Image 1 (tube, rainbow, N blue to C red):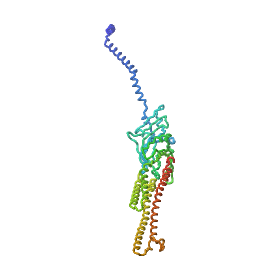
Image 2 (spheres, rainbow, N blue to C red):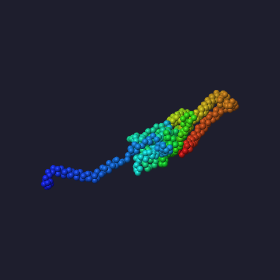
Image 3 (cartoon, one colour):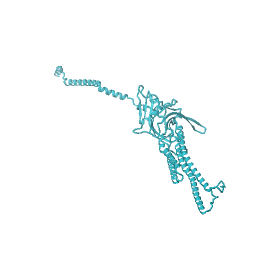
Length: 470
């Protein structure tokens, strides 16, 4: 600096402070330029710039929803072509079947798929990403207005959040996929004539509420039967593993706008049938086995002596009352008030009648036994009277007005021995009573064997078919 001062001072120019200021200014500018180059070439700064650039250029489904404006119209509303909606029921759980209310409850995931070019065209052209729409944003796009015609009660799953999602893809067909978890309680018209060996077919109908067949067509997905064939879960031990069947049909409704103006509207309806086959082992062990045991107990009544009235009457009345009470309780178990009889009613009625017949049979046998006993008592009195007359030396006298000697309006000859006739009548009544008991000993078990064979062949073989095969 001294040299510089001397150089400038030699010329007579007092510029020392100005030189210092100039040198300082040049130095600062140099360091600023070098620092800018360093910062621009730093890897850290490059990553920050790239991140900022990616944030600015990133794609969000919110951008699509902001530009989407077709919530109130279907995708092909302007073209006039019908929209195809593909449906599937997966992850099905059969939770309950109520015969009294004629309803059943399932929990399933309803899957829908359709094409919507209005939202697919807003996705990046070269992106294979599947974008998801969740929560309240789902209500911002068009959804098919499906409903269940047989629905009595239903609910969305909301734990821990609403279980529904929409996925949108530009390259996957058809493009928009909607999944929602539902619990459906639906009516099921049950035919209980074959109860408790019956098979029931409960249908889940899916249709559109406001779109006819010319605007929206429903189809089952190709994998519907494959997924439901092994995916259904049964939570009811009284039924065997159900079979399923997916079909579709159309229905035509006639609307009358005025007295002379009518128009027809056709709707597509999808039908998903669940066929249930009841396992009747519980009813066999608790109701049917008990009733047939009571029938066998009444059968033992035929082995008792007709003169043992207290034993036979007690056994007969006990079995009849027990059978009636058991049949009344069993017929009301889990069934509505039907206007027709069921297979269980047939079984219980037959066994109750067997016990009643046993009690009625003893009434007839008892009448015969009483008549025989009265004749035997009369014969005993007659014998005693003849003995007294012989001891007194009087000739024996016969009572011609006796009901034993008078038969069919004719009187027996005078020389007929009254005691012999009474004895023969008493023996004849005893034989009739004994023959009736002997016949019932064979008839009752024979009837039960034939009845059981006919019952099994009728209700468990002939009528126990697959409802889904029809």
